[in-house]
Image: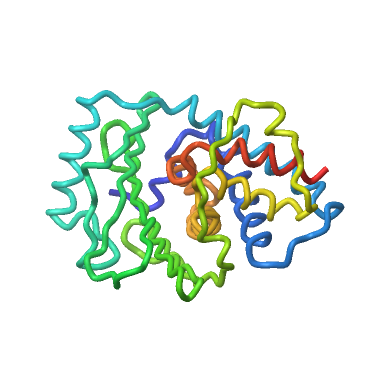
Length: 268
Protein backbone atom coordinates (compact mmCIF):
# COMPACT_ATOMS: atom_id res chain seq x y z
CA UNK A 1 0.00 0.00 0.00
CA UNK A 2 1.45 3.35 -1.02
CA UNK A 3 1.47 6.40 1.21
CA UNK A 4 -0.76 9.25 0.14
CA UNK A 5 -3.28 6.85 -1.30
CA UNK A 6 -6.04 9.37 -0.81
CA UNK A 7 -4.49 11.40 -3.63
CA UNK A 8 -5.58 8.75 -6.12
CA UNK A 9 -9.25 9.46 -5.52
CA UNK A 10 -10.95 11.01 -8.52
CA UNK A 11 -9.87 14.54 -9.32
CA UNK A 12 -13.49 15.52 -9.77
CA UNK A 13 -13.87 15.57 -6.00
CA UNK A 14 -10.87 17.85 -5.33
CA UNK A 15 -13.12 20.90 -5.35
CA UNK A 16 -15.45 19.21 -2.87
CA UNK A 17 -12.54 18.34 -0.59
CA UNK A 18 -10.93 21.77 -0.54
CA UNK A 19 -14.30 23.40 0.01
CA UNK A 20 -15.11 21.04 2.83
CA UNK A 21 -11.76 21.78 4.47
CA UNK A 22 -12.57 25.48 4.52
CA UNK A 23 -16.07 24.84 5.81
CA UNK A 24 -14.71 22.57 8.54
CA UNK A 25 -12.68 25.52 9.76
CA UNK A 26 -15.84 27.60 9.85
CA UNK A 27 -17.56 24.98 11.94
CA UNK A 28 -14.59 24.93 14.31
CA UNK A 29 -14.50 28.69 14.72
CA UNK A 30 -18.26 28.90 15.24
CA UNK A 31 -18.20 26.13 17.86
CA UNK A 32 -15.28 27.47 19.89
CA UNK A 33 -15.89 31.22 19.74
CA UNK A 34 -18.82 33.29 21.04
CA UNK A 35 -21.81 33.59 18.74
CA UNK A 36 -21.02 36.05 15.96
CA UNK A 37 -23.23 38.84 14.74
CA UNK A 38 -25.47 38.34 11.72
CA UNK A 39 -23.36 40.67 9.62
CA UNK A 40 -20.17 38.67 10.19
CA UNK A 41 -21.84 35.49 8.95
CA UNK A 42 -22.96 36.70 5.54
CA UNK A 43 -19.91 35.35 3.70
CA UNK A 44 -19.80 32.16 5.75
CA UNK A 45 -23.45 31.42 5.07
CA UNK A 46 -22.74 31.22 1.35
CA UNK A 47 -19.88 28.76 1.83
CA UNK A 48 -21.86 26.53 4.18
CA UNK A 49 -24.81 26.47 1.82
CA UNK A 50 -22.44 25.42 -0.95
CA UNK A 51 -21.02 22.71 1.32
CA UNK A 52 -24.52 21.41 1.85
CA UNK A 53 -24.95 21.16 -1.91
CA UNK A 54 -21.62 19.35 -2.25
CA UNK A 55 -22.62 16.90 0.48
CA UNK A 56 -25.81 16.14 -1.41
CA UNK A 57 -23.81 15.76 -4.64
CA UNK A 58 -21.47 13.33 -2.88
CA UNK A 59 -24.40 11.26 -1.68
CA UNK A 60 -25.80 11.18 -5.20
CA UNK A 61 -22.45 10.22 -6.73
CA UNK A 62 -21.57 7.44 -4.29
CA UNK A 63 -24.26 4.76 -4.25
CA UNK A 64 -24.78 1.90 -1.82
CA UNK A 65 -22.68 -1.08 -2.81
CA UNK A 66 -24.25 -4.49 -3.36
CA UNK A 67 -24.44 -7.02 -0.55
CA UNK A 68 -21.85 -9.13 -2.38
CA UNK A 69 -19.41 -6.21 -2.65
CA UNK A 70 -20.02 -5.19 0.96
CA UNK A 71 -19.37 -8.68 2.30
CA UNK A 72 -16.29 -9.07 0.13
CA UNK A 73 -14.73 -5.82 1.38
CA UNK A 74 -15.60 -6.59 5.00
CA UNK A 75 -13.84 -9.94 4.64
CA UNK A 76 -10.83 -8.27 3.01
CA UNK A 77 -10.58 -5.63 5.75
CA UNK A 78 -10.92 -8.24 8.48
CA UNK A 79 -7.96 -10.11 6.98
CA UNK A 80 -5.88 -6.93 6.63
CA UNK A 81 -6.46 -6.13 10.31
CA UNK A 82 -5.59 -9.69 11.34
CA UNK A 83 -2.41 -9.54 9.25
CA UNK A 84 -1.53 -6.18 10.86
CA UNK A 85 -1.55 -4.44 7.50
CA UNK A 86 -4.11 -2.10 9.01
CA UNK A 87 -3.07 -0.64 12.35
CA UNK A 88 -5.69 0.95 14.59
CA UNK A 89 -4.90 3.56 17.24
CA UNK A 90 -4.88 1.16 20.18
CA UNK A 91 -5.02 -2.56 20.93
CA UNK A 92 -8.52 -2.34 22.40
CA UNK A 93 -9.92 -0.84 19.17
CA UNK A 94 -12.33 -3.11 17.34
CA UNK A 95 -14.09 -2.51 14.04
CA UNK A 96 -17.84 -3.07 14.23
CA UNK A 97 -18.23 -4.92 10.94
CA UNK A 98 -21.93 -5.53 11.61
CA UNK A 99 -22.55 -1.80 11.10
CA UNK A 100 -20.37 -1.35 8.01
CA UNK A 101 -21.58 0.88 5.18
CA UNK A 102 -20.04 0.66 1.71
CA UNK A 103 -20.43 3.33 -0.97
CA UNK A 104 -19.06 3.06 -4.48
CA UNK A 105 -18.57 5.14 -7.61
CA UNK A 106 -17.01 3.30 -10.52
CA UNK A 107 -13.72 1.83 -9.34
CA UNK A 108 -13.72 3.84 -6.10
CA UNK A 109 -15.21 2.33 -2.95
CA UNK A 110 -15.47 3.78 0.55
CA UNK A 111 -16.01 1.48 3.53
CA UNK A 112 -17.31 3.13 6.71
CA UNK A 113 -17.11 1.13 9.96
CA UNK A 114 -17.73 2.34 13.54
CA UNK A 115 -14.84 1.75 15.96
CA UNK A 116 -15.35 0.46 19.51
CA UNK A 117 -12.81 0.85 22.33
CA UNK A 118 -13.13 -1.70 25.12
CA UNK A 119 -11.25 0.37 27.69
CA UNK A 120 -13.55 3.41 27.68
CA UNK A 121 -14.83 4.54 31.06
CA UNK A 122 -18.54 4.38 31.80
CA UNK A 123 -20.44 7.49 30.78
CA UNK A 124 -18.21 8.43 27.85
CA UNK A 125 -19.77 8.78 24.39
CA UNK A 126 -18.05 7.10 21.46
CA UNK A 127 -18.70 8.36 17.91
CA UNK A 128 -15.43 7.10 16.39
CA UNK A 129 -15.27 5.73 12.87
CA UNK A 130 -12.93 4.15 10.34
CA UNK A 131 -13.04 4.68 6.57
CA UNK A 132 -11.07 2.59 4.07
CA UNK A 133 -10.63 3.71 0.47
CA UNK A 134 -10.36 1.07 -2.24
CA UNK A 135 -9.28 1.85 -5.79
CA UNK A 136 -9.58 -0.91 -8.41
CA UNK A 137 -10.31 -3.39 -5.60
CA UNK A 138 -7.04 -2.58 -3.82
CA UNK A 139 -6.75 -0.81 -0.47
CA UNK A 140 -5.56 2.70 -1.23
CA UNK A 141 -5.54 4.17 2.27
CA UNK A 142 -7.47 4.25 5.51
CA UNK A 143 -8.46 6.80 8.09
CA UNK A 144 -9.51 6.54 11.74
CA UNK A 145 -11.29 9.41 13.46
CA UNK A 146 -11.45 8.83 17.22
CA UNK A 147 -14.19 10.91 18.85
CA UNK A 148 -14.84 10.45 22.58
CA UNK A 149 -17.29 12.79 24.30
CA UNK A 150 -17.50 13.43 28.03
CA UNK A 151 -20.89 14.99 28.88
CA UNK A 152 -19.92 15.46 32.54
CA UNK A 153 -16.76 17.44 31.81
CA UNK A 154 -18.28 18.96 28.65
CA UNK A 155 -15.33 17.94 26.48
CA UNK A 156 -14.68 15.94 23.36
CA UNK A 157 -11.30 14.32 22.73
CA UNK A 158 -10.62 14.04 19.01
CA UNK A 159 -7.75 12.21 17.33
CA UNK A 160 -7.18 11.72 13.61
CA UNK A 161 -5.09 8.94 12.03
CA UNK A 162 -4.06 8.28 8.45
CA UNK A 163 -2.64 4.87 7.52
CA UNK A 164 -2.01 4.16 11.20
CA UNK A 165 -0.12 7.38 11.92
CA UNK A 166 -1.53 10.17 14.06
CA UNK A 167 -2.16 13.42 12.22
CA UNK A 168 -3.29 15.42 15.23
CA UNK A 169 -5.39 15.49 18.37
CA UNK A 170 -7.36 18.11 20.22
CA UNK A 171 -9.70 18.47 23.19
CA UNK A 172 -12.81 20.54 22.58
CA UNK A 173 -14.40 22.43 25.46
CA UNK A 174 -18.10 22.57 24.79
CA UNK A 175 -21.39 23.72 26.27
CA UNK A 176 -23.98 21.50 27.96
CA UNK A 177 -26.53 22.21 25.26
CA UNK A 178 -24.22 20.73 22.62
CA UNK A 179 -24.69 17.30 24.20
CA UNK A 180 -28.47 17.62 24.36
CA UNK A 181 -30.95 16.14 21.92
CA UNK A 182 -34.72 16.44 22.09
CA UNK A 183 -35.72 14.54 18.97
CA UNK A 184 -38.73 16.84 18.66
CA UNK A 185 -41.15 15.91 15.92
CA UNK A 186 -40.71 18.24 12.96
CA UNK A 187 -41.67 17.99 9.33
CA UNK A 188 -38.45 18.68 7.42
CA UNK A 189 -40.43 19.17 4.23
CA UNK A 190 -42.60 21.88 5.76
CA UNK A 191 -41.91 25.34 4.39
CA UNK A 192 -43.51 26.86 7.50
CA UNK A 193 -41.15 24.89 9.75
CA UNK A 194 -38.20 25.88 7.60
CA UNK A 195 -38.88 29.61 7.61
CA UNK A 196 -40.36 30.12 11.08
CA UNK A 197 -37.76 31.99 13.17
CA UNK A 198 -37.10 31.39 16.85
CA UNK A 199 -38.53 33.93 19.28
CA UNK A 200 -35.01 35.03 20.19
CA UNK A 201 -32.46 35.97 17.55
CA UNK A 202 -29.63 33.64 18.56
CA UNK A 203 -27.19 33.80 15.66
CA UNK A 204 -26.42 31.29 12.92
CA UNK A 205 -24.40 28.74 14.89
CA UNK A 206 -26.85 28.72 17.81
CA UNK A 207 -29.76 28.21 15.40
CA UNK A 208 -27.86 25.44 13.63
CA UNK A 209 -27.17 23.65 16.93
CA UNK A 210 -30.81 23.99 18.01
CA UNK A 211 -31.97 22.50 14.72
CA UNK A 212 -29.63 19.54 15.13
CA UNK A 213 -30.87 19.14 18.70
CA UNK A 214 -34.48 19.13 17.56
CA UNK A 215 -33.65 16.49 14.97
CA UNK A 216 -32.00 14.22 17.52
CA UNK A 217 -28.38 14.95 16.51
CA UNK A 218 -25.99 16.28 19.15
CA UNK A 219 -24.03 19.32 17.96
CA UNK A 220 -20.85 18.12 19.72
CA UNK A 221 -20.61 15.33 17.15
CA UNK A 222 -20.55 17.78 14.23
CA UNK A 223 -17.96 19.97 15.98
CA UNK A 224 -15.79 16.92 16.70
CA UNK A 225 -15.97 15.59 13.14
CA UNK A 226 -14.93 18.99 11.82
CA UNK A 227 -11.78 18.88 13.97
CA UNK A 228 -10.88 15.28 13.13
CA UNK A 229 -11.47 15.68 9.43
CA UNK A 230 -9.65 19.00 9.40
CA UNK A 231 -6.42 17.19 10.28
CA UNK A 232 -6.91 14.76 7.37
CA UNK A 233 -7.83 17.55 4.96
CA UNK A 234 -4.67 19.47 5.74
CA UNK A 235 -2.38 16.42 5.63
CA UNK A 236 -3.58 15.25 2.21
CA UNK A 237 -3.92 18.55 0.33
CA UNK A 238 -7.70 18.35 0.72
CA UNK A 239 -8.42 14.91 -0.71
CA UNK A 240 -8.55 13.28 2.74
CA UNK A 241 -11.80 15.18 3.28
CA UNK A 242 -13.65 12.86 0.92
CA UNK A 243 -14.04 9.91 3.32
CA UNK A 244 -15.17 12.40 5.97
CA UNK A 245 -18.10 13.37 3.79
CA UNK A 246 -19.36 9.84 4.32
CA UNK A 247 -18.79 10.03 8.06
CA UNK A 248 -20.39 13.46 8.24
CA UNK A 249 -23.44 12.22 6.34
CA UNK A 250 -23.93 9.10 8.46
CA UNK A 251 -23.26 10.62 11.88
CA UNK A 252 -25.46 13.63 11.16
CA UNK A 253 -28.22 11.21 10.17
CA UNK A 254 -28.92 13.08 6.97
CA UNK A 255 -30.24 16.26 8.60
CA UNK A 256 -27.25 18.56 8.21
CA UNK A 257 -28.36 20.08 4.90
CA UNK A 258 -31.81 20.80 6.27
CA UNK A 259 -30.39 22.47 9.37
CA UNK A 260 -27.96 24.57 7.33
CA UNK A 261 -30.86 26.07 5.37
CA UNK A 262 -33.10 26.42 8.41
CA UNK A 263 -30.40 28.23 10.38
CA UNK A 264 -29.78 30.58 7.49
CA UNK A 265 -33.47 31.41 7.19
CA UNK A 266 -33.77 32.08 10.93
CA UNK A 267 -30.69 34.30 10.95
CA UNK A 268 -31.96 36.70 8.28
